[in-house]
Image (tube, rainbow, N blue to C red; front, top):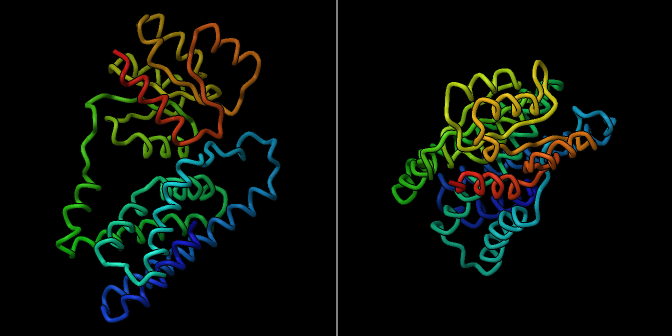
Amino acid sequence: MEQLASDLYFRSAKYFHDDEKLAEFLNHIAEDEAWHYHVMASALEHYRNTDSTVPSTKPAITIDQQTDHKINSVLQEISDKLSANTLTKEFLFDQILFVEYSEWNMIFLYVVNTLKKIIPEFRVAATKMQSHKRSVELFFENIPYTRDVVLNLKNLPSVWNEKILIIEDEESVSELIREILCKEGKIDVAFNGLEGIQKIKENYYKLIISDIDMPMMDGFSCYSQAVEKFPLINKRFLFLSGNASPENRSFLRKNQLPFLTKPFHIKAIRDHALQILLTP
């Protein structure tokens, strides 16, 4: 996908070569996307050479067909209009903004944030990704047609004024979930069950997304203490874990708790989260 975006932006730069500033911008983001491709290729190589049975090497997310099709179809539309010589600046701007603020960049950031802890190359990638995003924002902020769109995308209010708690010891995973659900309410993060139960005692959360295996206090212990203090909170929990052991599944079934196994789909976590948020 990164390679496809790069190719299309380079083609678009040639298509709009008479507009020097636009062509320069398109060439710049095309080079960024080409670099993103190499970052993701390095990530893939790393995972191929890592023992997949080690829990810390297992990704928390995978790409569902709907998400993949949504982004791919946007890029395909650009390609089709380029081939037919019917591409307009307005249409291209809309598509670029859609891609730049889509789930695709959330996934890229998740990969970078996961690997930057162990591979220096990915620390550089994190800073360059932020520079890429800022370059896109600055370009579109200077175009009257898109200025309001950019501001709306950056400052879009929550659909509900609800509070969400993520209890997850892996910071990269909690950041990913925060990005996926950022429009649904105010999000707090706890890095273990002990922090989680303290926050639950201090706040009312409409949705609590929790890992199971964590240091200091696991997710099930946090859940049990929360339900003991607030009996109706049981329907607010959604569990995520890479450990689908018989014991864990037995606890989940016994308490009728929703559960997603890592790697989970973006659509799946969104659907489960909304189902809980919409439950009175």
